[in-house]
Image (cartoon, rainbow, N blue to C red; front, side, top):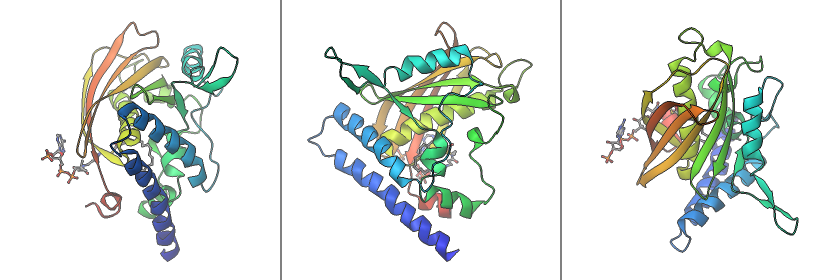
Length: 256
Ligand SMILES: CCCCCCCC/C=C\CCCCCCCC(=O)SCCNC(=O)CCNC(=O)[C@H](O)C(C)(C)COP(=O)(O)OP(=O)(O)OC[C@H]1O[C@@H](n2cnc3c(N)ncnc32)[C@H](O)[C@@H]1OP(=O)(O)O
């Protein structure tokens, strides 16, 4: 127990360094777009060094991914690295995020925090072994435009109305995408409000696109909106507004 607590404290120091990076980037001399870009790049580059082990990255293609899932994955992935006219490779506008599992559960500290609260804890969206059975998704972030895109293929275990995706499963994905986006923009947050309008049902097994946008930041509040469309963008499935509040880690440990 004492050792676990020590590890948690160490982990928090690591995560604390993420907030100091963020604070540094909040200096008035840095412009908004440059600040956002640099923070995400620094965060994504810094995260692997925080991992105590190399867990599977669930956001890479697997054999269950259908053609639409692959097509959209390739669409965004090809914009993560672009070629200049001189034939040189350079960073593109989009960045693929490794799976949420790697970001939170296996981040030093995060994994111990999870274990001390509930030893059998598993990340909700990444805990089904059968590939393709439930949530298959990959997230991309565009720091310049302060938006995120998520390609989501809904497996057969997510049924709600016959042949269609459960509204709670859709809400889970919206919370995941907007929550990840808010975390990138503001550091540790919790969802305070999620307001979803369901416009048309999502067929089970289909691939949809979730796009989230920063509406505004006010003190501890980060307001994000999100829409879910069919993979070719022709059909609107849901529209959402969400509010995230920045928290201290003690809020999770002590419920305060
Ligand atoms: C976390 C570790 C991160 C580690 C980093 C590693 C990288 C991670 C990468 C990737 C992340 C992936 C992300 C996944 C996504 C999942 C996220 C979830 O599903 S979270 C679970 C569901 N949410 C809850 O269970 C919250 C329960 N609620 C609470 O705990 C509190 O109510 C909380 C924290 C939300 C607010 O409590 P207060 O005490 O801090 O704040 P008060 O004083 O109540 O409110 C502050 C202001 O906000 C407004 N406010 C509060 N709640 C509101 C609401 N529901 N609607 C509108 N305004 C609200 C208030 O009116 C007040 O506004 P005025 O300052 O007066 O202007």
